[in-house]
Image 1 (cartoon, rainbow, N blue to C red):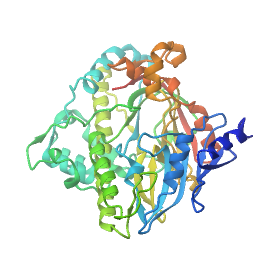
Image 2: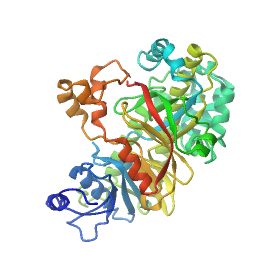
Image 3: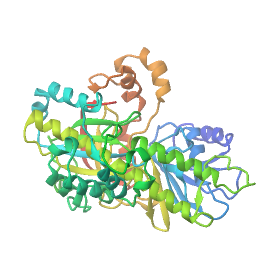
Image 4: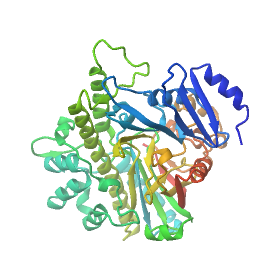
Length: 487
């Protein structure tokens, strides 16, 4: 079935320089001012808004070419597709050959999702909810957490990610990690815990280099007190307590340790200021290395080519990996603070890790690299975590490895109203209009509650259903929100 007023919409997009066609929930888009412009595809449920700005951003990204050689051989977008602030649409996925694009990842490197479950009933949790919340507010909002590390541990973190950090911590535990179950952490880091063979994507380790990290975080010796580690961040980042509401695939849920009635803990955060430092630096470097005398691309998106600057391509990928390693450990530490407070309040609660995966990252795949911006890997058999808003369901899925969408899936529902719009007009709307009725949001700033209100997001069920129909993912379990921490 075609969307209403499709032809009128396509004519309006044509006036903005976009050649757009539609078939079976998929919009194909290309720039009209370039006869050789490649086509990008966007999967969208019926009735979802079509934003010309996002389509133009995706068409521009698909058209990125380096004059020395390098191209994009496939571009697509997932159903949480919406405009990005830095010229790259959220939900974009591109497969590149002989070039990498720092701007296609941006500054929130290895922003991702982490999911734990615990054998606590909702009644048991709510009976001591206030005590738990006060402890978590101290850690997440008031800086009572202790993420102190030795200089050696910080270097190992940046170099090797979770395994490097853990080895150093086993030698000399510091901060609140001295109260962690280090044996449990080691088992979760070693993998072999689910049908995909691991609990953390890539084992939480990429080929980093501590020398590429911010200098103040890697001193020669002494202790490092990094104010960014174990922090949620702003924007759409969160830590949410959920309930496993329904199991859809009992065999996989059992293999992954997930059962109906359990509590779940979902963490959405990334590499914080380290990612901003590295992402911003490499966007500037890519621009600075553009061939002298050649006109800048209209999109202002600058790739790095292996033909002209192979050493810069390698350095960028290692710098991105360095920030990604930090992101993996940041989510781990957010979870460890939570597990620590669970044990303090509720007794001996194990809260094992189900999975941790990134959704802002460049990875070697097939002929070159696949870069995902607000989309996550969804390879065959791999766990996939897709959150809704804080007033809607979230989903644990399993990837089906669909090559038409570069083995990817959405990283959430996607925004339909901007934070600016919510801050400007949301305060005058009722709780019901914002979708906030019954929502338990823990935050220090009321504007965060409004700008992240459920009304800001697309309907998660439609996002899930269209991806299942497209054979990108299948559902394993549905999770309902209990309370959400928003920094």
